[in-house]
Image 1 (tube, one colour):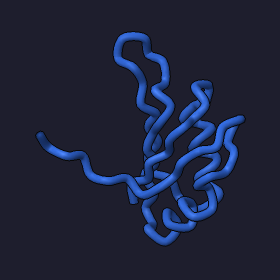
Image 2 (cartoon, one colour; image 1 turned 180 degrees about the vertical axis):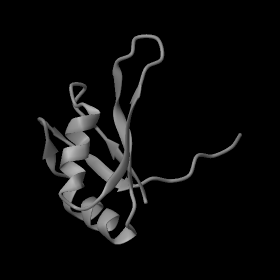
Image 3 (cartoon, one colour; image 1 turned 135 degrees about the vertical axis):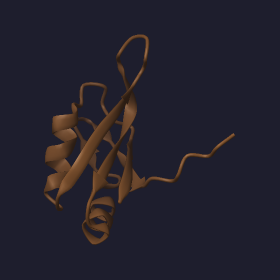
Length: 83
């Protein structure tokens, strides 16, 4: 299951996100999206969890909670639109 995490504090690392989501199950990939010129976080990222049930539980329990000083948005990622 691919999970979108938004409104992240710019100081959040991929390790911070992995630790938060591992409380709900196995995390296979963590990616924080960064600006290609400055290298600074854009404030959102994606988590891949192997088990959909664990992913759904993480979404339900983490959406709207405070994480490192900001209220995060957590939901199932939508596929990218091709233009």
